[in-house]
Length: 196
Image 1 (cartoon, rainbow, N blue to C red):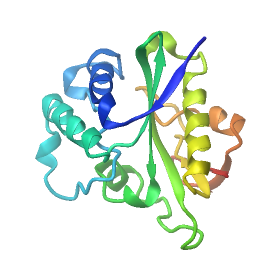
Image 2: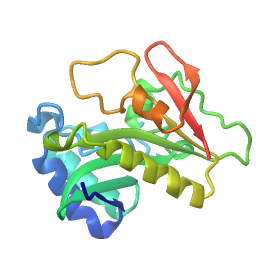
Image 3: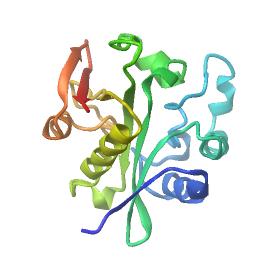
Image 4: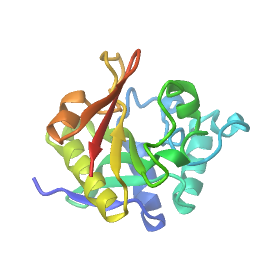
C-alpha cells in the first residue's frame, strides 16, 4: 500500500480539519470530536471554556495548526488523509490539559540539559485503514525526523490495560517492534522510549 507521510504545516490545515470532521475517532459524535487540541504546546491551565464544544475545538485546532502549536504528521493514501500522529517536544507540553489530567505521574525532567525528548501522544487512523501498518509508518517517520532535529529520544505512553474507546496512545507491541524500551512503569501506563 502506498502511504505518504507529511509533517503537519499550516498549508495542511484544511486536510487536518477534514480528517477530524469526517473520519471516525471513537464514536465520532460531535460532542466527542477532539481535533487533538488537548495534546499541544498551549497552556491550558486557564480558559478551558475554549474547548467546551466540538465547534470550539475545531476553531482552536485551526488556530493551533496555523501557529504550529499542534505538531505531528498526517498519513495519506490516494490523496486522502487516513491517519494522524501527534508528536511534539515533550518539555513544551507540560501545561496542556491532557498532560495535566493524565500524565502527572510521568517524570518531567530530562536526563540532562542537553537531552531533548520528542513525545508521541496520540494516533488516529481511519477505521478502514487500521491494522495495515499506518501507525507504524507514522511512528517511523517521527523517529527519523527526530534524529534530524537533534532529539535524543522519542517517548510514548501506551496504556497498560485496553480501554473501551479507541486506544489512541498506540499499542505497546508496535513500540516494542520499533525499538522502544520501557523507561518507566506507572500505575496505568508504560513510558516507552527509543534512543536515537
